[in-house]
Length: 204
Image 1 (cartoon, rainbow, N blue to C red):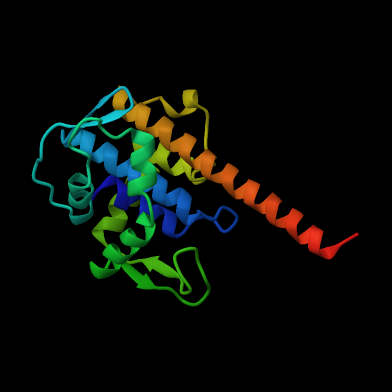
Image 2 (cartoon, one colour):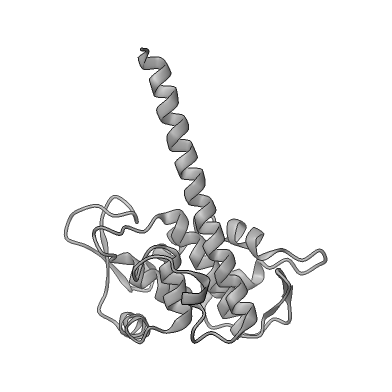
């Protein structure tokens, strides 16, 4: 399993008062993929630019797709641009992949951000691994979860760095946080514009 799949699994059943937005999760999943590619020595970072460093064999289909999607010529893609490009509808891709692998099942009624029908994580080794990482407060997974509002919500940079000693990983996590905050700002602006437009039609 990958960090992205572990993140998706722990996001499927969030606390009722802290639902995870698909857009937020998609950005964090793209960041998780990039962190796994760094760990696999498939990429390095030059500042905030993603530099392909090789094409190692990857035993995960979605991570392999992420590797294949890298920009392999100068100018290399910036981390922020990668998050927005790779992250487009990425949560739906992970849901489809996990369903195909039998890792997700249809839940007992209700609705969720993952579609009209609620999905639940099957009792499997993948679920146990993801929950084990969460319970152990594994630094990378904890920081990604916090960026989308899980595990108590986003913390400060100082709160997220303990346990992390890889500068490239810390850079990716910081940019994921910024991207999620930017998306939320866009949502708020659109909500305000929509309300203002409705007031115009409603009249005094």
